[in-house]
Picture 1: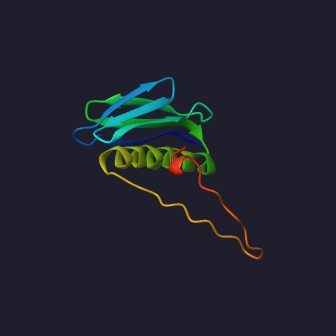
Picture 2: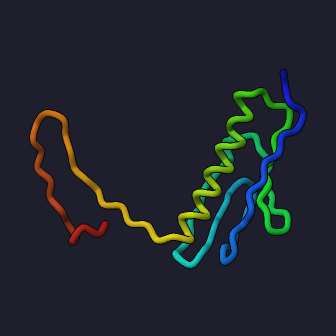
Length: 108
């Protein structure tokens, strides 16, 4: 059975700017800018005051799960520009030993 309209909303945190142009989301905060493209999904994204709203029309339950996933991605973008994050890469292989060479001082 199809749902006529389903809508999810996310509050925009203070100190974060968001721009949405044709399903292309760009979030800017004190630690940088992150971009994400949702053109492959049949959703409607727009800002309304201090909220980002995602809307989907005539969707089944499997398709409605995409709506919540998009909202999670956008909230992760908010978190990524608010908090500083550093990922240390680990090099592991299951059976054979491997050799790795670090170039440019680890900056690529």
